[in-house]
Amino acid sequence: MYLLRLALASLANRRFTALLTAFAIALSVCLLLAVERVRTEARASFASTISGTDLIVGARSGSVNLLLYSVFRIGNATNNIRWDSYQHIAKDPRVKWAIPISLGDSHRGYRVLGTTGEYFEHYQYGRRQHLQLSQGRPFADNPFDVVLGAEVAEALHYKLGDKLVLAHGVAAISLVKHDDKPFTVVGVLQRTGTPVDRTLHISLAGMEAIHIDWHNGVPARGAGRISAEQARAMDLQPAAITAFMLGLNNKIATFSVQREINEYGNEPLLAILPGVALQELWSLMGTAEQALFVVSLFVVLTGLIGMLTAILTSLNERRREMAILRSVGARPWHIAGLLVLEALALALAGIGAGLGLLYAGIALAQGYVQANYGLYLPLAWPSAHEWTLLAIILGAALLMGSVPAWRAYRQSLADGLSIHL
Amino acid sequence: MRRLLLALPFALLPLAVAHAHDEHDHDHGTLAAHEHGVAKLNVVLDGNTLELELDSPAMNIVGFEHAATSDADKAKVAAARKQLEQPLALFNLAQAAGCKEDQQALESPLFGDAAEGDKHEHGHQHADINAHYQLACSNPGKLTQVDLAPLFKAFAQTQKINVQLIGPNGQKGLEATAAKAVVAF
Image 1 (spheres, rainbow over the protein chains, first blue to last red):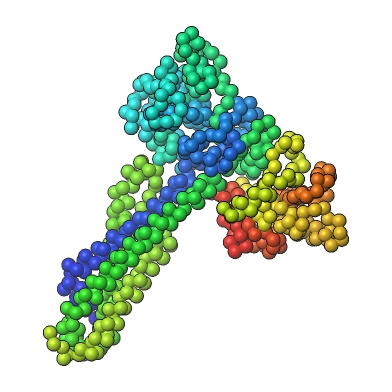
Image 2 (cartoon, chains in turn purple, brown; image 1 turned 180 degrees about the horizontal axis):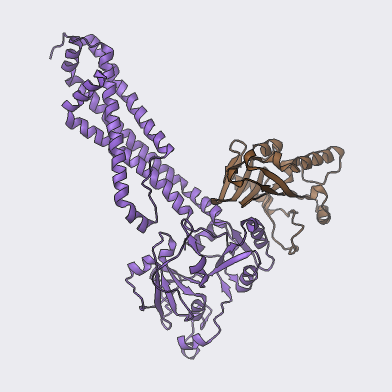
């Protein structure tokens, strides 16, 4: 006990260096834990980009590809699927709800999603949260209504009642615009932290209406043009959609419905389990996640080596301190113990301060991170895994502390009191 | 990548897979992939019902894929069938969950399913074994994982099982191997 007191008193005597060393360790511990938390949470939030959907169905391609375009709005479908196929499957008694989606247009770099009212009712993300409107209402009978994702509304400064023109294709700068048929903003969704925020939602009828007078991929000219008013009166039933999402009455049926869709004879379709495809996609990104972890491990190592340097360099200055201790009866192992305890105290202070920094950071940034990145960082006690990491850091600190301890042990034997300064 | 390339010739070969129930099975119909050593397992737990669906190339289970003609082959098929009829021995489930077998269906050209008979004249063919089990668990809350170790042990030629899992925590996809045979819900 008196050794610990001595160690602390000695540290207090060199408080500036000691504080800096502890701070370096604190920062590295904080970084390691923060990376760990963000990593775990990013994985969880990634996995909950879409929830409550049992199957996603699209043209036959790969499961990751289908997931990317239907959920993340990245890339494009290889093919469309027929409206008949959608109807056929949506009518199956095992299917509780079906959300058709139609992609392909954009507005200033944001993707446009054609869908039905079911989308607002059944689409779920996160911990089975439903989409909420922050302003206005979902689109109704008027085919030229548009509901904006939170980020679209914020970035482009749109408010209810604004008119906007959609562009054909998904390039950020598009040459062909649907400028004869402007859309009116009727609703803005609440922020979800998912790709929904970056999407403009229109009805399938709206999607059909803006392309109704197109032939061979270009808009009609002159007399062939159909105005927005004329389009409104026409039959706006689409012939094809890009994909659809299914919710089933009974989860048990998932695999049999999936198999039936995959073996559907009239059209090559692919049904995927979004949860499984999400994991597949995450495993592709797992390497980056590992790299991040390794980097933060090296930062901790740097912090600890900083501590080792600080203690080792102080050894020479403290020859007199050691000598005095020896003269009053301290044995060499006392001196060694003193230095190990010093390292322990520094590491403990560093870990404590690091945890403090982490929690202060989480408390401050929690709301912002949740709103902007959809990451929920819980203000929870360290998990078992985190405790293990902390224990490893402490162990490494002790191991490093034993290096100067060993030197001091040897020196204090040799130096004794006959030291020449 | 190498594994994918290895699978390619199998995927390209004309396959006779166990889709006897497929109503759209005409000549230009699609062909399911077939990779020796790799099986597929679908697990779904909803309420008290646990369903397990194992789809494996016959090679993994009996060591050949032709119809059994010799007595030795017939004995192998019969032995495999016997093992497949005991799902509770193949899938190690927590005792406390109280799972009991409700229904099972085994399907394979090797078991002499009539509908597959005509396909055997095409020379080199692949055959799958499909086992479907429905279990009722009195205490599904205790069922947190499925241990596939007995399955890997019983059918040693199975190197990997691609598992699709649906449980109380949602959907999961993972790969099980003999060394990592436990899949958690």
